[in-house]
Image (tube, helix red, strand yellow):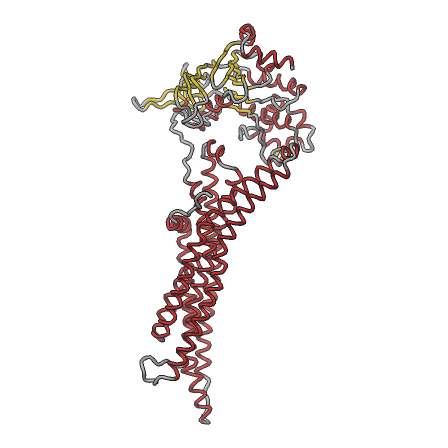
Length: 632
């Protein structure tokens, strides 16, 4: 067993939660606090009226009745209506508090979700490679929901309890210091029980939230890989794994709640015992002592005090019952803030991509879309700005890279791609082909060497602008919920319907789209589950085509397309690649024969390079790969 998870600095987490609430809803919180104070004071006024009712009205009326005198009710009715007015004000304040807290709670959670999603969009790819997607989803759902209960219920309850305790304590001191001492003694016992429960369960609430995230992550993986599970008959194995994760969660939840669930009944019984002790001691003080004694109390005093005793013990009991929600919320908030505190993807670039036009042989920036792009490079040293035409000239100069500092996966990579050239990467799985393309768009940053784009170090180019100049067709296609047209337009949101259809025709996707029930307006869901893998890949190619970038990266772009479909798309791909620098990764070596240069990688090194004919003459690694494929 490893060390039990522990909630670090809960007071800081709580303060940070409050900061989110106060930042946007300070006025609401102030009004809620006023409503709570009003409600508590009205309740205390009603309780104190018991003393007046008994000592000022009921007792004199009984004596008058026994003496045969006339009983007058006018004063009593007036007092009752006055108290009823206080209670009505309390009801209105309580209603207003509830309505405002709904806005405060939902508004705060809305802001948190927005900030979470905004932060997630700015995290590096590395974060998503190292965190289960289901665990991240658990932050948006379970962890956020724990905050909902704390903000909407626990926070107002604690504030209400604090004000009630102070107000009631002052009232009890005024009524009877002796009975107040008895009450305080019982409260100390209740606080001791609460402290024991806190120490026994807080660490398990933290563990519970983490294991809930792990369970959600496992479920998400199983849903995405359901076909693979069935192909390899892993249902029983996965059931056992799920049972194990579920049992861990169940055990953590059981241990987290076992103290808390017995805390309420214990405190309730201690509260009842406190009430009985005060009733007994108060009865003695009221009956046995001389009314002139400083310790003596009236029957009205005792009735009011016993009500205050319940009011004093109840907030402590209520807080102890809210302990469960508070600790769970702090554990959830800890996970939320850890995501929010993740370092965003660094971007120190300052070279931007702008629309350009030529004037007297020089490039100039323009607001119009001209189809000509340029890199806007500000030189701080001499306060000048230069413009470099975007052409797609890419150079790797002695690049070393590793996903971790301990292990280098690319070694001394040197290559160049002139504008319009087609560069292919081939080699065994894990040789580093996809890694090279991930470095071009700066999904990861290199450890050594330089990558230049149109003569500019890509570290100087803003990442958004760099990626805007690249068109990428990934091996894993992903289609979003929406129409076919919207999915193609994802490559360039301002594209017209005519441009969408032109891009589809270029990728030879127009034919199958036209046969869909609603054509380009057909709704896609579940990552395009209603389409074949080849059709989804064609849409992703059309999405790259509509972006019209000068550089294309095709990572196994035709790997999921059958031979017949591949022939149809090849012509479109050739038109798409014409005039563009293209990097192609392909296991089907027949698709890279016409490349200007083929790079053969092995264990993160370029071991061969040249045209298809040159490499075949060398009879090296490429020759064996190619002839082995042909013989298959």
